[in-house]
Image (cartoon, rainbow, N blue to C red; front, side, top):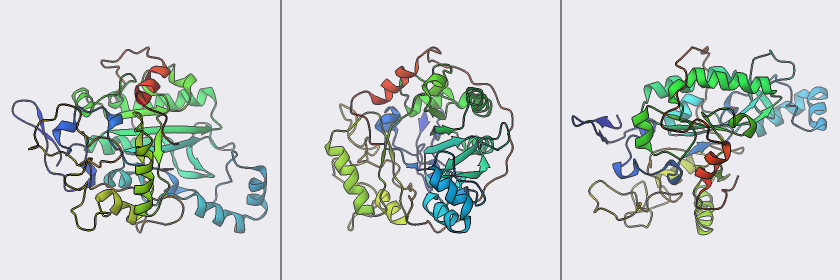
Length: 359
């Protein structure tokens, strides 16, 4: 499903029947639009579906909370786990649902193994970073025209040596799937180079040493569970002037899924209302002199994709951790992008044309 290559060598779009291949099913006019002008759904604290019930409280939390976790674990731990869990779908299931921005908060446990890196949101995950990145890589191999943004941040307990170890794992696992920083690419550009991963890394000193890493990419965080509230938030942000750097990162329940699919239109089909300013263009539309108005936070070109929840409600499906080990892949290759581009150049590319997005 998704796009295919025609006999002339060019890509063509096919109908998308699931969310797993929505990027390749976009109308071709959007293939040459820079990624920061597309609405890209993301999951907040992506890995919290596998928080460890026996994990100590994160060292980044207050001493009082850490003390309570040790003295009254039977009371403190259930409360912390309930508050910390923002996702119940595994990372592969989230990708299948259409999520293309993964919020990966990485940590090294104080008493953990030397090279074992976990994810964290108040407590640590059972999943290891290396295994999860391998799982993402294997999914991308099965969906060669889907592009993901991996936002690595927090880095609790990370030394400079552990940063270098993590970057080596990233390069080894994704290889030439990585898009080196520079000008924000289009889908067509990434497809032609065989690239599928933009790696956002919120540690400038490390970014400056590695051309495969991009500086932290801002995003809009809806933090809503009701469709109408989510829509109001997005409309309010749009009214302030559309920034040029964001990805759309919203977290909701099946109700919010209906909002993204167009469920807020009681008398219309899923998607943006026909004739609305943010309508998704069709292939038989008349040519437009400028970038079509469907790009930006108001449009949902992948109208079948869902978003995931934050804190209060739970999706009805359960996730599970896949126990995949690291496997060696090709080394990363810098392609068509200067390898010495500083971190600020990548940040400028995502922030050009507007104010910073709401964190």
